[in-house]
Image 1: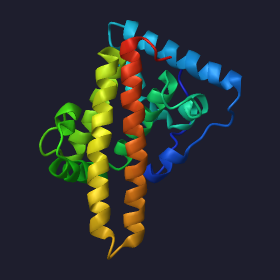
Image 2 (image 1 turned 90 degrees about the horizontal axis):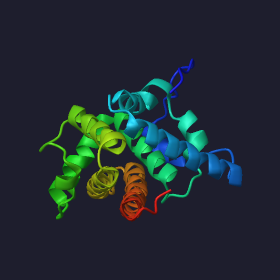
Image 3 (image 1 turned 45 degrees about the vertical axis):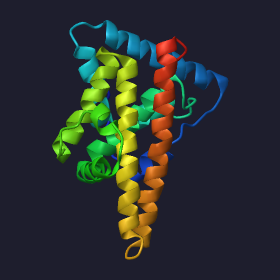
Image 4 (image 1 turned 135 degrees about the vertical axis):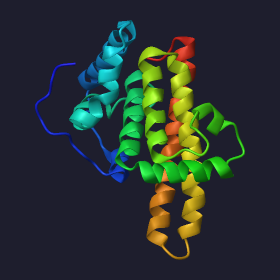
Length: 209
């Protein structure tokens, strides 16, 4: 990926999900699908793994705007839509790993499912381990089984949904604004989980483009 000469765009995690592209034209849609396919193919064909590592580090170095311009308006269940959601998830976790770790651990304790096992974080997971987890999931996107990586990301989202929902309940009486923020976060992550799981199914059937 060519070198960029601008400062990273740092956005608070609460605003990531509200980013949109500047166009919804057919040409923008075509470009989104073409660039996502080309990027994924290039990374997966590079046996050295260097392309994958650059892509994993891209948002930390360059921010989110370049990716948003390409993929933010793509359909949710599509290749660019899935990659966009994965990058949003990664940047949100890198931006605030402490909150991500707290919500993940609360969700792991409260959620009666195998999602925490599927996501694959240590038990319990500290902030650094949560950051490492999302980077490992992205590494799987570019080098491993793409559908497995998407399912792991979806499972991670479901654990966070549980954590955010239960924590929102804790704040409801004393800090209603914080409770509202957490509820909104849970709602967005629930949508991401569904989108990523659907994308994984389409990838396995050869229908994700």
